Amino acid sequence: MATISPMDVLRDLAQQKLDDTTSHLGKVQQDYSRAVTQLEQLEAYELEYQQTLQSNMANKGISVVDWVNHQSFIDSLGKVVFQHTGHVTQCKKSVDLALSSWRSDKQRLNSFDTLKSRAEEVRTLKENRQEQKLMDEFAQRASLGKKVL
Image (tube, rainbow, N blue to C red; front, side, top):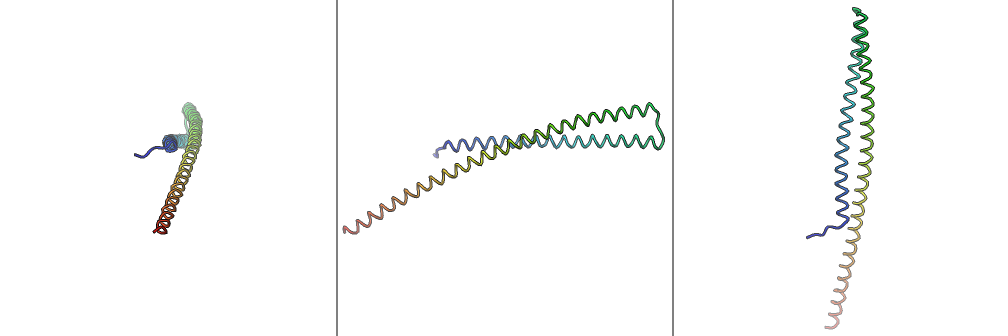
């Protein structure tokens, strides 16, 4: 049974943390995309409503009461757009923060991978040296054995 080194445990923990961070990053990116889409829809609806009001005023005219109602609705839409713009900004900050965390976790995992590969290289080098030493001993014994005969 292979033994698990502390470096393997640390590397696995770093990998799990990166996986969790990646999942979180994906979620906040989806939230941000959804918020941007909603903002675009709200802005389009506000613009369409303004254009409809202007068209109605130019073509057939509207009463003062209707104009006040339409203008009030447009103002309400403007407030909603403004609030949603703040939401989009918050979502963007969340994405930036999650991306920063992801980069940090990825760098940490890469560091553990580098340390692990260096340790593996050192172990392999030691094994090769030990094997070479044994081969030299066998060769020396073999040559001594032939001289005695």
